[in-house]
Image (tube, helix red, strand yellow):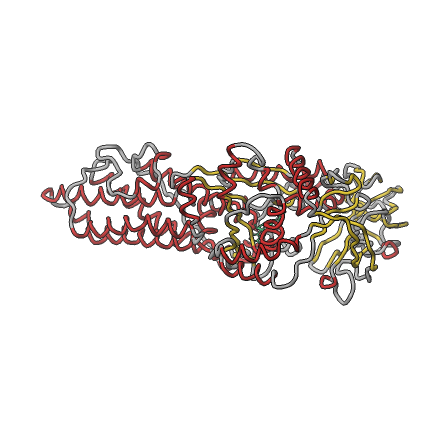
Length: 639
Ligand code: MSP
């Protein structure tokens, strides 16, 4: 039914999660966005009209806190980090049609309109919420989130507090959702995540608290029916998927919503699989068509961690190994739906064997033979022998294999089928021995046919790899003299014989260079890739004025979880605001001899002017201060 609908409408709509702006982009964000791009390109190649949406999620506690720690207003901070995402995507060849921000004026307007509709229908009510409230975190915890009954951040026992809030009657739609998932088996896929969603639904659903009082959080969209509250960040964020295509009006909306496919990782299954369909139902909007859920990239078998320096930055990999190898690796290595482990060694092995060896060699030997034996042009097609038939049959089978695996997000399977064909083509060359045929002019016609077939095999491969490696595909097509690369849809590879006899070919250089991965320097290499900043000169270092300072007094900054106001002696008295409150009490700090960046431009944090910054290391179990031991006066320069 899904397929039939898509074919009739001939449209395809794909979304990524909108990423929080509280951290810079990493390999996980890049993976989801590249998968979405591969799907968008694949469906375009199938002749469909595609809309591809990505963007950033900018409201809520997390962002407000990150802005505070960075000493910026939430809006300025969100502008800065959102731009990092927006600017990254073109570098990864991402072809999104729109980049949405939840701070966009039209998004805010639509969120308010939907809230009002649901409120008017009676699905939002005002009620009392009781829970464990941590004053330090300024948030409620569920009992299951507490560790030994204490706040996991502050190790303090939270207060049992109640607060008045607005609630969405999610429970009303529980049975409807169970029925919908049951009658539409691929609504949530792969199956393991559908089962996980059904398991959530076995317990009675609690109504969803969808507001935050402004006394606690102001960085959000105001409720249209009560100006003392802002919307809960998930209620706001999920609606991006409809505002991004112009809900409630217009052709884009009516064309693309019925074929909406969401792409997410398993971490946000609950909001997408449970909250979102019930929110849509309550707002009178049809459910999305599919929720596609993938697993996690782990590093060294563990979660990516800032403190261990295992955050993989997509641009580092692109710069070191090239964009297409990076995209290929991500798509080939992960089985969609399962977790995968990233290691640079595995990465290098994969691209050396599949790209430098298999595909790279096929391209270079084919073109050099066309150069040598056919005067640098595509030769005549000639007669077809039984050996050629086999190559042609294998090529023609690819369409179905690639179509079915890519449509079902089984990219690794589609690529495996393609690489089998790369090997068939390599084998064809070995068996046909063009270099032997070339020795006898009587074989000229056969030699032409063999080289023609090899070049046509390259075209077939180039067309099929377009969604994953668009640049390499275009380059192969250029080299074999196909001038309308953009016109090479999947339709053109259903039939053998697309390269044009007589057009010049270009031998070109190595398409995929080999990379060395020296085991001895492995550890060093990994760290260079994942954690160290760019090299600087001694002069650059000299610009930083590091000084010894003693903490004279310390007090927590009111209404802040993290910030502590310090009075320090750094040869002169200064005020420094430090984000160490989650790890040190004010009393812990007094009397410590610490290190200060004395020439950092002063910045206002929560209204207090901070004249410098203290140094600390963020380890996996918390912060450690950089302290000075030995007798040394305050204000002494550190070099
Ligand atoms: N802002 C919410 C999403 C709102 S959507 C209406 C959010 N943002 S996030 O920045 O935390 O992004 C989460 C998503 O990033 C995951 O669902 C996944 O797409 C991607 N990934 C983050 N880390 C990842 C891995 N380690 N591995 C694979 N993908 C990961 O949640």
